Image: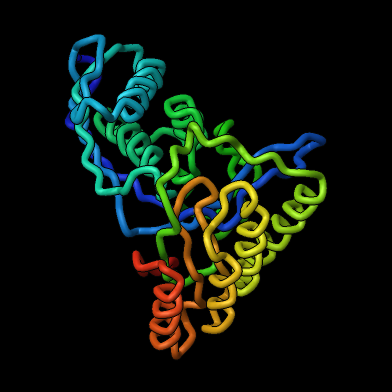
Length: 299
């Protein structure tokens, strides 16, 4: 360990709050699954990594096996860059709820990868991070692409499209819709031709929403994607939820397409935002959605 300067690396990774859109898209003559996630700062995962002159990585807590795999794969990349082999001790601390649609596994894995890279004073390319994140957990969210909104092939670890700017800022009234979902055991939705046609339209609409920073248009995309996926992972009382959103002037409804969280999306700059959200909270409670929270994007 004399040739390479090392230290205890530390890093954190954010979460997302479900998806703005998730589906299947026509890309260069083939159909590719992809998603656009909604940024969220409610929770985060933190990791520390202490390199050791060993062949294995130990992790605490021991059940965070995906984070462990992420660290191992990151060390493989470090080895390719430095010509040296390391093991080490990984510690992961996360407050992210599991199996709900916040991207808990991806957040763990990313924090671990970043901590390993930080231990060696390296910054791995985002494309490399995406690739090894998918390798570590089988499917990944797009949390490694924080600067701009992207359409991400979550089971391949590749960008389909970079929209070139952040999503329009919104205020979200989040709520829990049911039971947590095991993402990897969840059977991927099968979309028919008309639904794929619609997803291509939604991709174009979202591109314009990002370019114009049009929260209302993004909300339309999110609501449409939610309805397409309703037959694959039904949300109780979705029609009533959408009616409530219309009543309070929300721009749309979005959900975790393989989780149990949803949200009413509001233009964060409307002057009477507070009263609208409070009315929405009451309407959701009337539907049985007592678990609620709020956050804002675009900060």
